[in-house]
Amino acid sequence: MTAVVARIGPLLLVQIVALGAAVVVDLRLAAVLAVWFAAWQVNIRLSESALARRDGGRVAVAAVFGVTVLILWELTVRLFQVPGVILPPPTRIAATLAGNLDLLWGDFVQTVVKGALTGYVIGCAAAVAMAVAVDRSPFLQRGLLPVGNFMAALPIIGTAPILVMWFGFGWQSKAAVVVLMVFFPMLVNAVAGLQAADRMQRDLMETYAASYWQSLVKLRLPAAMPLIFNGLKISSTLALIGAIVAEFFGSPTLGLGFRISTSVGQLQLGMVWAGITVAALAGSAFYFAVAQAEKRVTFWHPSQRP
Amino acid sequence: MTSVTEIAAPGAGAGRTGLRAWRWVRLRVLPILAVVLGIVVVWYTACVPMNVKETLTFAERAGAEVEPASPAERRDMGRVALVLANPGQLGGSFALDRPRLPAPHQVVAELWETTVETRPTSKRSLVYHGWVTLSATLLGFGIGTALGVLLAVGIVHDRAMDMSVLPWAIASQTIPILAIAPMIIVVLNSIGLQGLIPKALISAYLSFFPVVVSMVAGLRSPAASQMDLMHTYSATGGQVFRKLRLPASVPYLFAALKVGIAASLIGAIVGELPTGASEGLGARLLAGSYYGQTVQIWSALFAAAILAAAMVGLIGLIERLTLRRMGFGR
Image 1 (cartoon, rainbow over the protein chains, first blue to last red):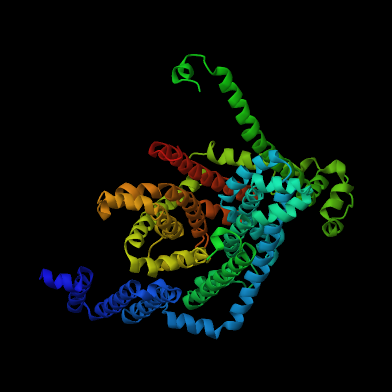
Image 2: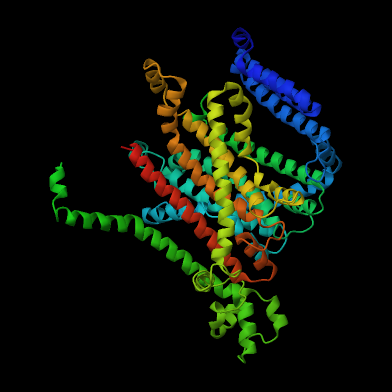
């Protein structure tokens, strides 16, 4: 017996026993477990092979896991006949997504482009401008850093009902929520970033007789970029959350947040999941774009070197 | 260097302590006070143009002469122009019943009235609504943190799990997962679960992912030389985990806890929106926005902010005490 365990490994043995028990209890459960265990064994093999050291292998392992979750989801919903108003299968979500591309494209433009992106640009620009404005006053910096850190931890999303009251149901109020949400994390990172250039580098600029603005543009802003991009990346996620959740407090009849909340109300969960998929794709693409820009701009930083 | 006995002598270092206290006030407290004061000044100033239309209507009803006299004309005028045209009639800006922007002291007064002067069991009490939200937050935060730490331990010890799950946990940080909150509430409601549990679930998954990502980084933070040292002691995997990896991960855990508790609170508040719940800070926000009760919205908002600040501050305090006892930062 121990020889068998040593040969096939304790995990596989546990899986085989569990599968055997499942066959006796419920065939549907056994089918689900079989898929799960098989995929898990594939991933164990993959992650132990030489392939795992390459980038392609890493992507493959993560992809196998992702696809397995989708297959398990589909199987579970179909075999156990889970009602569509509780959890629709992935294939139906994909069909809903494909069948409503025009509608969802309109939602995407309304929420992501008009609401999130406008607010993101205004909020981040305002925060960097403010950081530069207080740059010459260590007194104000010492005050702004703790206050900014404090504000960044607060549930600013709660200002959404107030801003919807002020700026109306359109995308302007969503952009205003996004401005408030991204401003403080961005401000803290920008203020800290402008202090990142070290003594030696500043002294060098001094020996060149560089003016304040020359040293700001040529040394301190570039040196601040890693932290500024840190703020930009944090803010990219916050911007989407702000734009979507603000729509729960009132919006015209389009927008991802509107789509999600009204479809939930009508129990059209396929549409809800389609909206969530669009939001997730938009979020990843947004973050990826900022990360790519970061690679270009801060190529000199140790964290970006291969 | 001063010896220990000198510092410990009664009265010694009193002058130095005073100097250090003043330095602390000058470098830390004064700048913060200045910024906060600036915010309050801007807020009061903004109240005047924001509320000018309501203020003038109110003044007109009280019999004052308002320029221009017809409400229709006033509606089309800019706010700043109205302020400039009626400099004498703006006394009511800070005392309106339903202002567009309530003055800070109105919000403070409402907060005081609904917390100290109202019984905590009353439906009007913000302590009551705050507790409804806080209990869901804490329950979810506890579940999310515990599961997050467990998964992180699994990821660090199992290569297949690491390569399969971690990329998805990291990717989850870039997408607005808060968007599925309404669905969770409604779906759980349809199978008979409502109240505390659905909100706690949202709080749990929002705090779960930051904890996973941060704990994995923390458990992997020991340097190769430290791992080698454990190896020369012929430490078992369990010993390496208990004596090196786990202690090394504590600073990372606290960083994640602070992010996680703030996210949990937001989750609980958003979780109160979709079903039109009647209890909790999120419900107060929504009810206030339905009925135009701006002072109520602002006081609920401030209550949420105070809760968040208190919880983050509490974790920060525990963090400092724990890390000092463990000998970090010496």
